[in-house]
Image: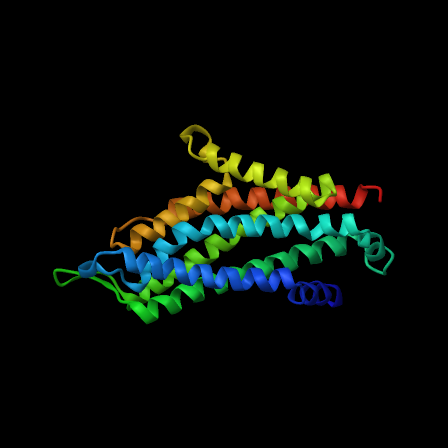
Amino acid sequence: MKLLKFEIVKFLKDRRFIILTIIVGIFSFLSGYILYLISPLKDKPSGFLMLSNSLNFIYYFLSIFALVFGVLTFSIEFENGTVHMILLGKYSRFKIIINKMINLFIINIFLLFISFISIIICGLIFSKFEGIIIQGYVLKTSLSLWLYTILTFFLILISLYTYSLMGIFLSIITKSVLPSILLSISLYFLFNILSIFPKIQNFLFPYYLNSAIEFFSKITKGIDISYFPFLLYFFLSNFIYIFLFSFLSIFLFERMEL
């Protein structure tokens, strides 16, 4: 518990993390505001539609941020030589890497929460979070749309965490900041490009993140779709990658020579 607290405090005191948090909040708010401005005067989007439209833009940046944070978790320790100081302590390598993984999960929750809250504040200022009613028929209630919003939050969170774990894995392999970042960004674009092709997209976790955003967008427009088959494949795909990246990272870190 002390080790996890140390990791969290270290990130909260890091200027780069503070600056990034501010950037995420401002960018998320502005994305909602800009989308509101460019929409037709007679057809201004509801708060939920503003949220879904904004997520279509910012989730790319959030994914890269999550990936880079995963990379920096160990690559900075390797380059600065501080990893040796950590290993000289009373904690095992297993506890060290597990606490770093938990810390990354908390960081992803925080950044995604800041992003959602910023867009929601924008929606409250310039629009309303109302249900969808067409010709007197209630397609979606406000409560159901809030529930879908919470579900989408957790789906994006799981995908962001998968990216972060991939970053940890790559940082342990390269042991250097710049090569880790270049390799991770290259894989990010490769995965997203490959997820376009129908024959292999079902095996790639970025495809399910794209689909989750698309599903939420359709729901906020009043389109009735079934989430259940998609959720099964979403969780299966992401948890397989989470397990692989976690297992390989732990395996390599416990056996590597430093």
